[in-house]
Length: 425
Image (cartoon, rainbow, N blue to C red; front, top):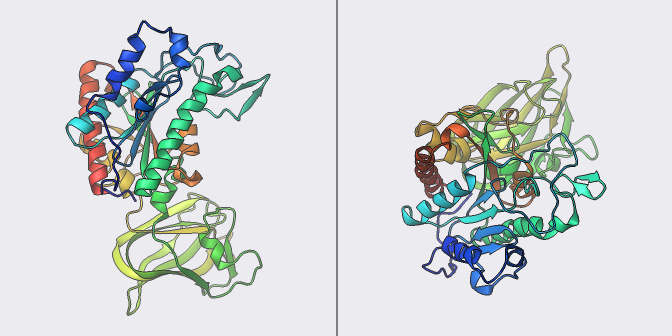
């Protein structure tokens, strides 16, 4: 969860805006464009500037904005991307760069907080920063670019993100990455992508479990500990209609939701209760079945309960495909659940309150809800499931960025939403 406390050793910042520094460099007649893009990092620009077609800014809060697809520069010696594959797109997503810069400015000047910022300035026809360079297409090309000449530019962008993630984690422990994109396919909406929760794994992971016990562990390699090891490929398995697995939180915690991933959850219907130990008795907070909607996490929400243990009482699966088998691949015990993404005070919650049309709706979340854009390489690679920050991709429809007036209003509302998230979570 993101702390709203300031860093203990805040970064020194010049009163001059980072963008002015970048503009002066770009306008300087002393060097050509090619010479500029090969300049080494000037120590005075460590926290703001443009190097190798990546514009960057250090922040003083654990929020990082990234923009991969609105660059308009031609990287020296890098050919246009021509090797075909199913996801090849070479067009810019217009106005995202200006929106990100203006949001960062407004956050600093109006809300008193400065986000981290990384913008890819190379045109997408040469480099797609939101594609994986390790996905080879043969002949030296990959999904991100055609030749190794693009390495310095591509690596600069992702190295800046990695460096800022390290800085945020070292100062705040965790943070939020917002990857800004544009869409014309759903022009009247803002679309959420968290890779169905994988990119916000840490945020959803919830309370730490200090001990796990179970009624039985009859199957070697499928023990109780595997129900909370962060791996959906392992599980606890038991056999019977009166089995249980118990998770000790070590001390009293507020619990308002539990997410459970069950083997064959999209095929079998499992009967179970979720119980919370409140210090005197087991309180049943859920009694029923899974929905058969997913083989991944399914969320079970209830009125907040304060307790130190959570128990899943399992009664096997029911129906035509039923048996006495009980499978739990993974469990997450949470105070907030998806609220930091879709609830009151969240970025998408505030945007909904401001009148924006969202897809999926904030009432739709969890595995399977994100079907239009689930999120791409950036939120996957730099997201918390892979050791980075909690991350989501925000696809902004053209109706919200087509005119200057629309962009100005979006900047006001998005900055307010980010500031609200920072203050709330």
